[in-house]
Length: 169
Image 1 (cartoon, one colour):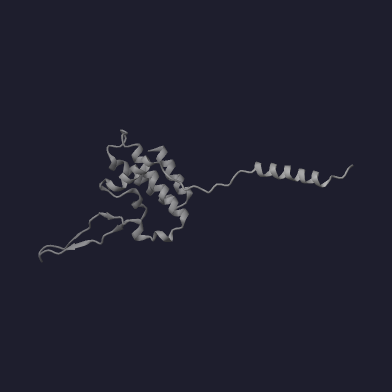
Image 2 (cartoon, helix red, strand yellow):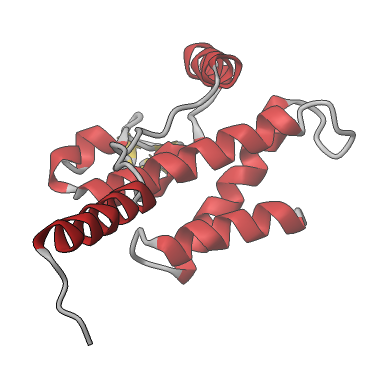
């Protein structure tokens, strides 16, 4: 067996380095997730219109009941207690500090809101829903059912909402 000379060793090293450097892929920076301009405009119009009701994401906070109002009338009549059954649902940012949620939970919450909004956008012409309010009521029921089943905002809750929206009733 012959010993390799210095030029031969350098030649083989150069070939090896070229082969290894050409075979690796260039590293790319991760790109942020974005929506197409038309989808983003649809989301913005939904948020601007407010559809004369609370958006579905507000139902993720427990509603607060107002205390009963006592109406006193004249002495010969008994006191009447009137309880208004209107529920007020404050926005998420008012009750729970959004900065306290970690990034994944914020992302999941955003995904849930977008799934609910997109469902109503997609099915607004269907005969199953008379108008946008009925669709919002349906998505609100789905959200409440999944919240009761899964207490935490996690991937299981997101999948629960997606599955129930696919099944539809």
